[in-house]
Image (cartoon, rainbow, N blue to C red):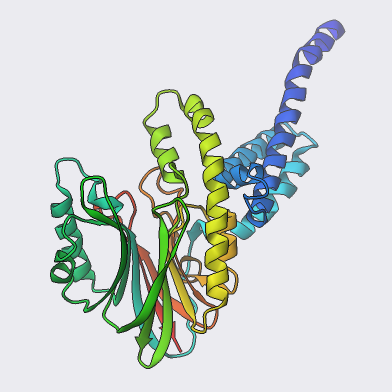
Length: 361
C-alpha cells in the first residue's frame, strides 16, 4: 500500500509543477497588463499586448484560482493577490447603478459613430446604407454627431441628408472608387472655427471644431486612430474568419506592433494639441484601443469617461466578440458631467453608435 501511494504521488508531481508554472505565468501576464497603460508603445510594445488581452487573462487567473482553492494549493494566494487590482478596472468594461447628479447646466447631446464606409451589410449599397444612417440620426436627434469612416460618392448630398444640422466640418480623402471618405462633424450649434490634425503616412486623422454653445466655446475633437495597414479591429475580423487562429495571431502581431507604435505617436500629438487649447475640450471617436491601453490612459488625463460616469451594463462598442470590445469613447473635462450614456446595437456598421448627454455648467 505504501508503495502504491508513493507511486501515485510521483505520477501527480509533474502535473503539480506544470500547474504552478501556469499559475505564475498567468499572474505575471496580468501584472504586465496593469502597467501596460503607462508604457508608450514607441518605447516597448510587449506590455501592450498583455493590455490588449486583459479580459481573457483575468478570466484565466480566475479559473486558476478556483482550481487552486479546490485542490487546496498554498500558492492560491499569489493569484488572489494579483486579481485584487483588477477590481479597480472593472468599471472600464461593465457598469451598474445610476449616474451621480451634479450642478445644473445646459445639456449637450453628442454622438460618435464609426459608420465603416457604409459597407457593413452585403446586398445593400453604400448610398442606401448612408440614407438609413441619416434617417436613424434624424430620429435620435443628437445635437452633435462625430462620424468616422464616413463615405460619400458625392459629398454635396451631405447637407440634404442632414438638413437638421446647418453646421458642418469635415476632412476627406479620395477613395479608390473616386468617392470621398474621412471624418465628418455635424452640429446644430454654430461651428465658429476648426481644423485638422493629420498623421504622416495615414488616412486616419483627428478634426476639431470650436462650437458656440450658449455663448460658451467648446472644442469637439472627432478622432479616428488606426495606424498602418492593419488595426485592432482588422485583427479581430481576421481571427474570427480564420480556421487557424494561432497562425493568424503570429502572422498579424508583428504588423500590429508597428501599428501600436504609430498610434502612440498619434495620441501624443493629440494630447499636445489639447494642452494648448484655450477652450474646454470633448474628445470622442474611434480610438481603436481598449481601455487597458496607453491611448486611453493618455487621453483620459484631466478627463472623465461618459461610460464610467453614466453608463450601464456592458460597454462594448464593436460588434465582433461582443461584449468584450470597447474602442469608441466620449471623454469630457472633469468640471462637466454626463447624465446618460447609451450604446445602441444597430446594424448599420461594425461599430455601434455611442450617445451621451453632457451637462456643461
